[in-house]
Each structure stands twice: as structure tokens, then as C-alpha cells.
Length: 149
Image 1: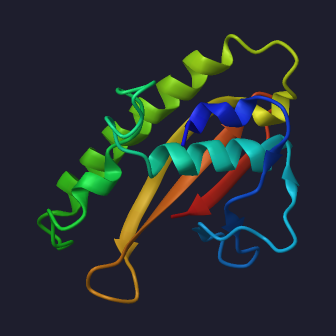
Image 2 (image 1 turned 180 degrees about the vertical axis):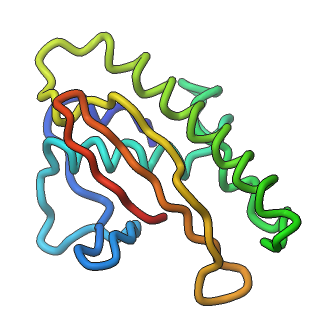
Image 3 (image 1 turned 90 degrees about the vertical axis):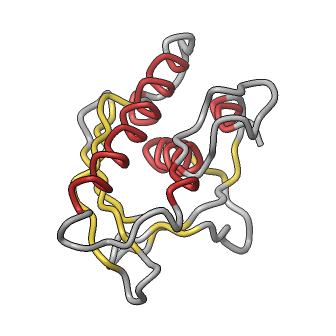
């Protein structure tokens, strides 16, 4: 899947964000919906974070590489900073890729364009093999949105 193809034309929503917990999942709505504005940007960010370099032959360097971290760490007090550093590096990579790509866009809504993206914190999920990461995105028109992945 070309992550940045989402910028072209009409895009269908493939992620859902829980309005109470802000948790994002790969769950398309039924019936299908067109995604616009900051929801479109959120979708681009999430798909980029879940993508690994080398998965797309047209863009072999794009993607965060976060899936490669699965199983490498047990989140404990001693590994917390190391895991957070790895996630921060991946988020910075995705932020740079998205901002560089959107420089070619001229007619895009400013609420669908990224100004900043940061990882805020990590915590254990419901099970031992589940980690939640809290992110903050800021659009070019100043909208701030936080989400969990």
C-alpha cells in the first residue's frame, strides 16, 4: 500500500479512533466513509507508523520501522527509556517523510497537513505483550490532536 497515495483524490477511511480513549485501530467503518482534513492526516500518520522500510518497492526507505521492535523488549523500568528513544527516532523519521512529501501539495486543506508530530509517553497495555504509545500531532492550521496506538 502506498502510504502517501492518500494525498491524491478521495480517500476512504481505513482506521478508527475511539472518541473516549483516543485509541486508534485498523478498523474501517461500515458503510465506507471518505476521510478528510485532520482525520486524513491522522490516517496517513498511523499507516506510516505501522509501515516498515522495504515493504513498498516504490518507496523502499519510507516507514517508521516500529513493527520491527515487536518482541525486542520487555517494557520494564530499566528498558523504558531505551524503548521510548527507539519510538522517538521512528516518529521523527515519519514526521520528516510526511512533511517532505506534503511540500509538493498546493491545494490540500491545511488541516490535512502536518506541522509537528511527537511521541508523548509509553505504557503497558492490558497484556504483557501490549504497549500503548501516546502521540500528539499538530496540523498546519494549529489543530492539536492526541491519539493512542
